Image 1 (cartoon, rainbow, N blue to C red):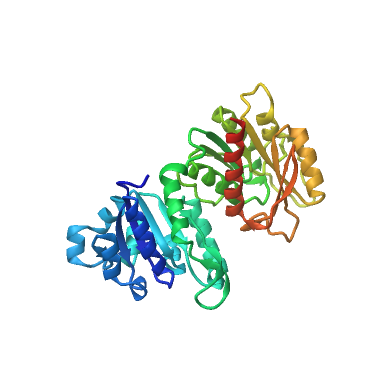
Image 2 (image 1 turned 135 degrees about the vertical axis):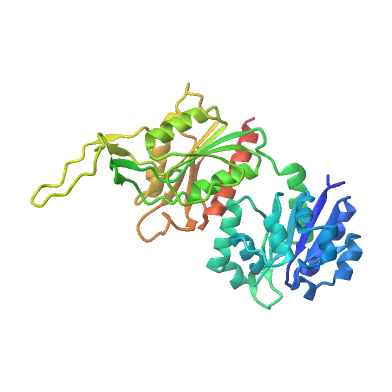
Length: 402
């Protein structure tokens, strides 16, 4: 599978760098060509001579080397690879990648590459769990960066927890999945809704909710990474458009429903958007002015289209798998179960959005998967992890049903 494949391996600083030597050997055994960028910190743990001996290639490390730049500039180095692998990926290098910094050869090549990137994080457990590192990882995943590990266990610093770099065989398996087995949703069309909708009262005011769109965007990115041709219909949000995803930006529920209908046929639909249930029956053409002693205007509301029910309806080009979200503040599973039956969808992911949970606008989510088979309680995890788990479940279900 790897015969003739060109891998650019970036080795950052950390004791886990020694594992990269074994990874090089395994890649070479399978016929891959391996070029290596060794950072200054990485060279404190493994020597350029060891890397060159195993890879059979020149080792690169100096951004300002006139010889290296004339023979193999960082642009060519980053683009002549079939896949870029960062192992170990230190907290520092992940931060540089997330924020677009380019102050050495490794970070410059990573910023210049137009190829897929697989990172294998390795660091102290507290560094891995720090909010800054988790935010950087979430940002990178939304951009399509692939990740393997880290594992939990004994760390070189003497502590125990998550932060161990994945083992060479695990990284190798992730590389092989990318080249041959990482597209379980190839040929599948996916439709995802995300974010809030804004229902205008007048030109400056609207009805909306606190949805950030983070969960829906993460789901769209996860499906695309598994090979699905993905359309994301997004309400107003500051979340960046996910890499490899077609994005249709809308404002209102009616616009979202029209975009979803135009996005059919689809094999799977995930309705993660927090669509406003009602909209003003008549939006004012001018700003509604406040006048002293005058009662506030009465705003007549009318119901918005039910997008989840519409996509679930038989005879409407129904996707094979329709998934909704139930954002509830009480009787979470009970209300979600009733919603699944009422809407006619296949799965509902119930999540608690009560004040204090931090779900709306936050990084984490606690969901319960409700289906005809029953209720499955998932542990609290990041929204990115929820997206990855859901995408894997979708791939498994479509394969089972095919």
